[in-house]
Image (tube, rainbow, N blue to C red; front, side):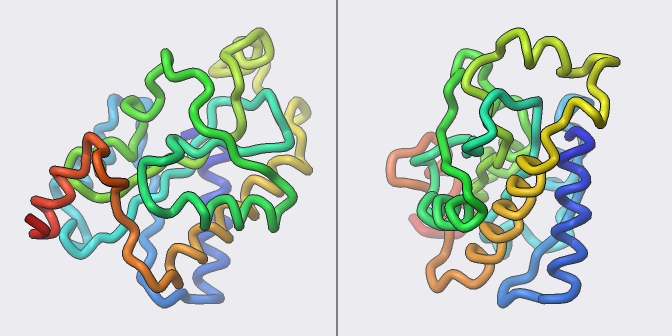
Length: 194
């Protein structure tokens, strides 16, 4: 998780500390850059049993190429998409799915540790339509400095994330996998839905 994702979590923690939602929310930094070790550790040693965990909503970023949308990794995986679309629209943003599936981001980021155990999980990212020169110039590079960031976009991104988390926390339905998703069988086993 980069600085923007970590700061997004800090902002979410502050917000939910003031306005506790209906469902409990755990804010955690996982350390995906270390081979998912943090998220894997958590799923084997959860603070709340995984069968009582209804959703994992990862915030992450690896740069952005579009400041009008956010990326949801991946759309049509779980039933919460409409909530993310609503939150993004309220923040003045649209939503796109994975535009560079060959990078396999879903399987490389912390939410997959939850998904493999059956917990519905998505990744909320800044918008990247391609892994192009702009991304390569700043992604994990010394040139990734504060003055290279579009602060208006980052504010909207954080706002959309926090609002989407809030909508999920108050939602009358239980977040779950879309029928046929590769992680749905693990969800059925975890929640005894077979």
